Image (cartoon, rainbow, N blue to C red; front, side, top):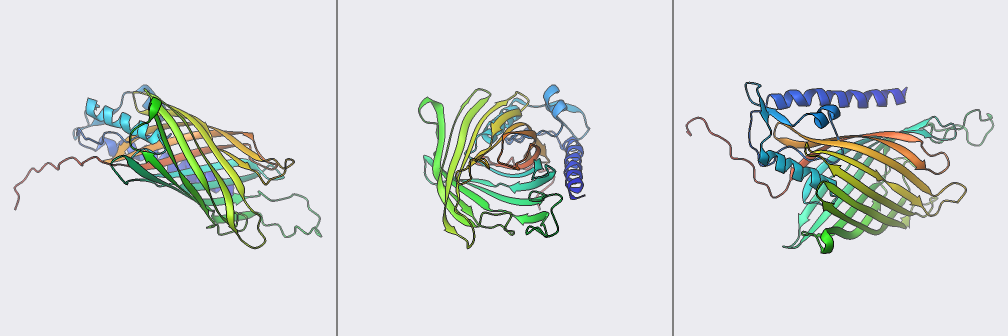
Length: 345
């Protein structure tokens, strides 16, 4: 039942956003706003319409107005900034993931809502410090459930469901403001794993640190790069094991003239302390589509995607889906002056 509730809730949320956004945009007066349409990490509210129709706005009389060149340029810039993990763009993604096929029975599933604020800080004329944080809220069922166990089994009673907060990951990237040789954009710094889990089956029980690195190149509509980190436990809770874990995310993205971004990547994790029999690697191949739009004057990105797990440890998932809603706050842009139609008193 919980699985059905989660899927239904995600579907209703997506449908609500997709149905409300066009109405909000239709009521917005026509403006040449410096912030243009919002940029995208992969997310598409109405994917078919965003791909096949040119972007438009409506004025107060609900007549169609073609997107201005300034708006188009700004939206394109936002889309490319969002494809760059260390761009000078404040973003707050709400990323909902649901994955199926877990556990000894193969019927387990896991819902994860990642709240992932990204905050760039200018620390000098030439350098930025980008802080990326991931707060995971998890609801999982039957990941550790064995069917038909004898009543005298030491595994009884079985804890079939776990809900709560998982461990928080935070990365700090020191990155030059301008691309380096060959047009490469890069950032390097430390990553931290904080033991914020609220259930023993949702956390690692360790405080871990290690290096993180990202490098990418943007050329025309293409963004190609990779992000990685390696974490080692430095403080371990009683009765818990040490952690040695690597995360690798190669990605390639293509942004169209309608500010739709197609992305394929793999968010792979290696547990170096796992046995070879259990399996060390989790390798989801993820295809995502995202679109930039505006709710009122707020630029946002909407993304939808699917996952296929090419490799997993024993009892790992088989496939999954992703829905992402991202609030965008471009830095270094000044808001449009407010038009005054009456006398100032």
